Amino acid sequence: MFSDNSAKNDLYLDGEEKFGYLGSRMYNFTKASKTIRNFYRFVISDLGKHSFQSIMDVGSGRGYILSKIVEISPEISAVGVDPSPFMVKLSNKHSKKLGLSKNLRFELGSSRDIHGNQAFDLIITTLSFHHWKNKDEAIAFLMKRLNPGGSLLIYEITDNGSINRKFVRSHLLNKSDFEKISKEIDIPVTIIEDAGFIRAEFSSA
View (cartoon, rainbow, N blue to C red):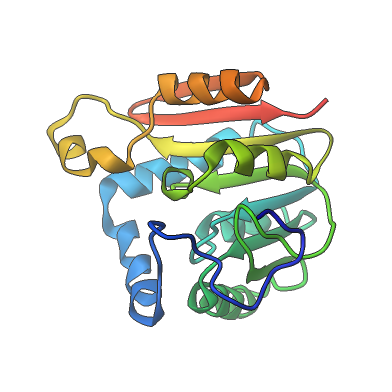
């Protein structure tokens, strides 16, 4: 069921990766990976090509991307949603520590369940989409939370043929995956690929 009011119960569906107390704290160490650091640079560089005043990150994790965006452009209003209460707590604590909490907040939510009715110029998700169940329905749901002319940007790692990708194949998405989804939901998609990273953009009218 898709809802605009975040429930108090478990926001994960069966089979979706969960981050509890320990996992949410260990997640920050992923930035030690060269691939992840390059991926974040890819995302932030791509976002710099878009004009927006408000942004929501779905599956925001520890909030690294939104923190960087608001640090660069303090006038932007940013909201991160994540189904892990531990991730949300740590992200809000870090936002406050950085002095960004005026324009950056994190709250419980998921690709199916978002509190309130605020609309955004951009909605993004980074390294989260491949975990989602019911991807088609989730995209349609999130598109309803875009301002006119807004975009949903999905960032993932793709298979570039390297050996290390073979060990995380279940976490990879390719151009054909997004083209199939686009056809199924009848929403055009614009795709860019760069050095093993991929961005799929679904735009509102």
